[in-house]
Structure formats: structure tokens, C-alpha cells
Length: 395
Image (cartoon, rainbow, N blue to C red):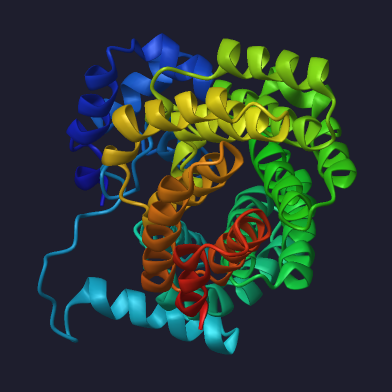
């Protein structure tokens, strides 16, 4: 074991050098003692604790395999393979509450599993995620209560798990369960003393109220992050301002909405994927241009300005998105904007595309949003056969 610890961690070093960062910069970013600590980790003289492993994973947007903390599993594993057996024992421990494996190893398994679950969710595979959350959450909560040494890391993972569950419930329009989950996420973020997680959860709470058309409550959720706004990552700061723009736009507070659009553009990073919060938020510049700008202009009765933002997103952002819901979302906004401009052909075109994609993703939320837009079209063009014919898409 001593010899293994002295093997240089070339993956960690490569990840740092790929970013063009010095050891001192990494040490500052994760609040490590000094740059010599980073050097010892890279040379294999020391292994970072679970606390710092989690921070490094978030900083680089990579998982524990990719940073060399756990050996990369082979593509094909037999049941007798040690790595596969450890995973099965970890799941068994979570299901029964019996600590078959060391708690620190269990937390590493949870950390890796959560990262995989986020990737699955953002790639449109949400249907297979929920069982894993129900497996891991009880043991994580128990760790928070009983293990002083690992409490903050376990709380961090609990907050992430509840935020992921919030997203799953929101997509199903189960807003009551989603709100309960995100309230838990907020509490665990406080236990973890992680402002980034707390603000990410607050954004998700604001999003729930936004979907329920309760902008005052949504704005309140965002405003509670104000004391923390300068302590979180640029991505979370920019996304918070984008959210405040859309809800003040919904409330017809034009000057405030336009001010928040400006703040969102000022703080939003050029490369969101490099932000430490990206792995568990997937916030891209789409949120800036579509939510912060386009949607806000729609609420302010400026559909032409909104379309400019949507077209920018369509041309420069959406093609890079693997998240299917992003494609549904943009078609929904296009349909609404073209309807507001009185463009019957354009709005019908985007309704058809949006409903088709919403059914593929199984999103009840977006089917409801598109149905609402279609109802507005029926009110506007009650005698147009093409508009009336769209009704069959929703049944």
C-alpha cells in the first residue's frame, strides 16, 4: 500500500495543466493549505482526503476515476472482479443499512454514482435514475447524523441527490414533491457549509415557483441568495441574475428586469463547462440567452427582441447540447414568440416540433407548456383549420 501511494497521479497533474493553472491557483481554489500540498498529491507522496477529492472533482468538472483517485474499471467485468464486487456490496450496504464496506469507500461510491446519474439525466435518461437515489439517500442521511468526520461530504452528496430528485419531480409536474426535495437540498447544503450548493438549490426552488406562475415566491427564493452572491461561482451568480430577470419580467417590472439582464450578461462565464458548479447544474449560455434575455423580452411584450435571443441560441448554443429537454424548450419559446408576433405558420411549425420532442423525452411539463401556448393560438385564430388541427397532437 505504501508503494502504491507513491505512484504519481498523472491524471490530476494533466487535468491541472490542461487548464493552464498553477499548483498555487488550484490550492487557492479548493482552499488547500498551500501549493506544496498539490505537489504532494500529484507526485503520489500523499493522497487527498475525501473532502479535497470532492473539491477537486467539482473544480475540474471530472469524476474520481478521471482524476486518478480510483482505478478506472474495465469495460467488461465478471461478478468475481473486485471492483464490481465492491459496487454490489456498496448497494447492498445502502439497501440494508449494514456497513459492509468502510464508510469512506461508500461515500466515494456515492460520489461517483451521483456524477453518473447527473450525466444520465442531462443526456435524457431520467427514467433509470430514481431507484439509485432511493438506494443511496438513506445511508447518506445516516452518515450525516452519525459520522462527524464525514458529515460535510455526506451532506454535500445529500444536497446533490435531493437536487437531482427535484429535477425529476419537476419534469413530471409533481411540484409538491419537488419542493419538499429542494427544501431538503437547501438544508443539507447548509450542513455542508457549501454556498454553491445552496444557491444552486435556491435557483431550482425559484424554478419551481416560476413553473407554477408564482413569480413573487420565485423572486423571494432568488433574493435570499443575495448575501451569498459574491461568494459563489460566476456560473451560479450569472444564472441567479438570469432567473431574477425572467421573474421580474413576468411581474412586468421592466426596469428591474432589464437591469438583471445586464447583470446576468456581466457575470455569466464565457465557458460555463469550466465552472465548478457545472457538473450538477448543466447551466450553459442557453440559460443566459433564452431564460435571462429571450423569455424576459417575451414577458415585456417584445417578441421581436426575444426571437433574436432564441435565434442566437439556436445557432450558437443548442447544437452542442445533448440534453433533449433543451431542444424541446427552445421550440416552445419559438412557438410562443411567433404566436405573439401573429405568425401563424411559424407558431404551428414549432408547436408540431415541440410536441413531438416532448413525447420522446416523456416531459409532462413541456407538453403542458406547449398546450398552453396552443390554447393562446386558438384564442387568437379560432377559425384557422391549421391551428385547430394541432389539438390532436395533445391526445
